[in-house]
Image (cartoon, rainbow, N blue to C red):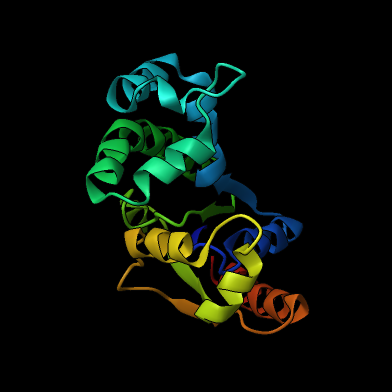
Length: 191
């Protein structure tokens, strides 16, 4: 069984995926894979530097994700270019992981804010969307992003129109865990 967990930034996807790991699911974290690509894939790094210039290189001579994020999330053309550079590689890696998991009959959670953009909605058996009120998302992310940045990021994220479960994560972490465990246990019975 492959379950996709998606939702906007700050909604609680990562926390929900952590609860699934406790239930024996392997996690495919698309954000982490994307970060690894940025850190280790020299071909991707060269393409990004070619597109955005040396200003995205940090003092450690690696791509500075904060500077890159600032450049892209304020400009649709820049985000489209970034996606053209990174998404094919990210998609290929995730598809390979999911194909292997399916062959081995593993239980997998795909955590991705960009599930739809990577066309992963067609590779998963079930989709869970995590949503939260915007004021709660702002509160969760206030140390990392301004409200304007949060809105810009959310406006770039597409949620699948078709999904199997929706969890409103406006309450406690315990309530989120209860809902996630309930849904995943229910799905495990049918797999």
